[in-house]
Length: 171
Image (cartoon, rainbow, N blue to C red):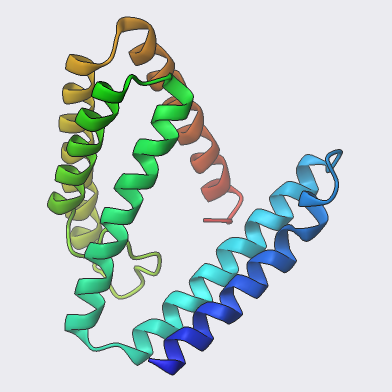
């Protein structure tokens, strides 16, 4: 719809504005990079909130499934670059990531969880952890020991950064 197109255009402009100072300055400080990241997350939250107001429940479900699939493909590309995957490995990893995306709970892509009960959040977290463990087990069968070590280190670094953001209130 025209409303969604306009919303996406506004979000892209917000993101471009957020990253302009960092992108044009190779010597940008960590604080500047963090501020740009916060502006990006704010733009995404605003877009999601406005989209949820425009879309029906069924449309929201379809959108989340598409977002999970897109996320799985992007994750594969990132892994391919970071781990130097062979073409055969990349095909297998993408299949694992897409299968995991299909298993994700309906509400996995939601940023705003204020309407979820504590037990719903806990259950969602358990489901997602189980899916992640299954993925990592499958990765171990495909990746070399060196690639798996690098994947694990990268994953742990990302988890620490996420925890740090949550503690500072910038989810």
